[in-house]
Length: 205
Image (cartoon, rainbow, N blue to C red; front, side, top):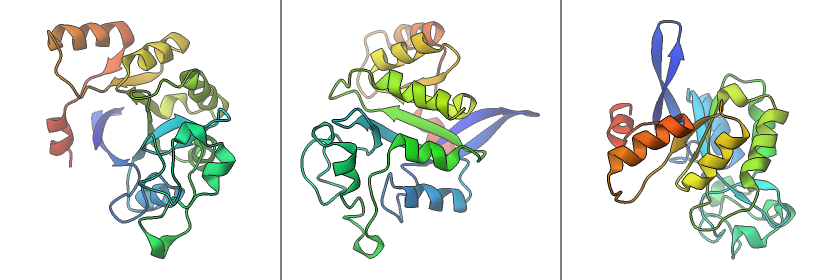
C-alpha cells in the first residue's frame, strides 16, 4: 500500500509494507517487518487485537488457526500463550516465529525513521479499551508523529481522536454507504482522518 507524507518539497509517496514483507515471509511477524525494511519499505502496516490478559498483540485474523499452529480466538489466549505458538505455520522452513506484541514492535522501530499504520481489528469483536492501550504505548515510545491508526470500526477512530485529536487516523470502509460522500467527508472533518482509495494504492504500487 502507499500513503502520502509531507516533505520539504511538498508530498512524498511512501511504500508501506502490508503485514510486513508477507509475500515471502510469515505475515505480521517481526521477521516480516525486518525484511520489509531491509527491502526499502518506508513503513509497516499491521493489525492488532487484545489478548485475554489485555496485551495488544499483532495478528490479522480474529482466530489463530490460519497463520499459527494453534486454534481458537485470539482473545481467548493470553499473550504468553500466543507467544508460544508458531506464527510461521505456513512457512515451515522459517519456523519458528512468534506472535509479536505491539510493545515488541514499538521497541524495534523506536529509533528508526519508520511510518507505522496500526489497524485496530474491532470490526468483529469489540475489544474494550484497546484504543487506550494502543495510545498509551504510542505515547510511551514517543511515536505519535510516526503513527497512523486505522479501523473499519469508526467508533474506534472516534475514541482515538477523543484521546488525542492530533493522532493521524484513517477510516476504512468495506461496505456500501448511504450518501457516502456526506458520511465520509463529514467524518473526515469531524475526526481529522485521512482519505484514500484503492485506486490510489494501486497507482502507488
